[in-house]
Length: 190
Image (cartoon, rainbow, N blue to C red; front, side, top):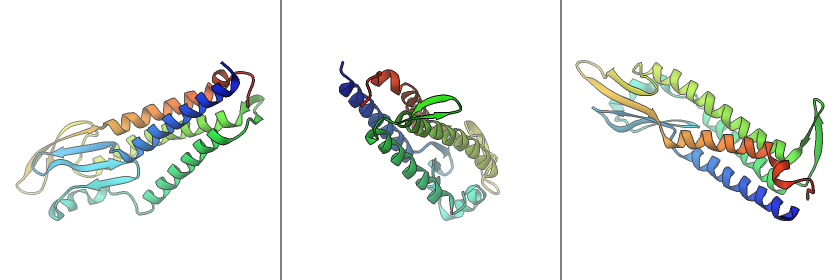
């Protein structure tokens, strides 16, 4: 296979894995079904908390909300990550040295985006565990009895959703793709 075809295979894979990253970004990562309130009473996205609660029930989770500056910062991160992937697709071959190791700039940027998304996924699950414990004393995954105020007690089932697992996969795939760029393209780089 010639070098030009290999470059296009790399670009195609960056597009596919970047598409998975964006898709996972807009999917819910965690939700809770409160039996007295309904399905998906609270949903967590990478940029914050979304509720499907009645106004009376909303007070129960007020302590779990993210600060107002959190969503803009997270969407800024998404924009930077997409810009990095676009750079990884269109940039020419450049080599640089970091701590006595030679790197290809496009592979490094794609791998860095993947690594940063893995960090986002890890921090998100830690923050979700802390925030969900702040309201109702919930477990992040599993079944919990919660006090909804006198005299109502309800069961709630919480868990990570497919969006979270897709985010994990897309981060890992982009990291691996960045690390394997030289193997995919070969020695004759465009």
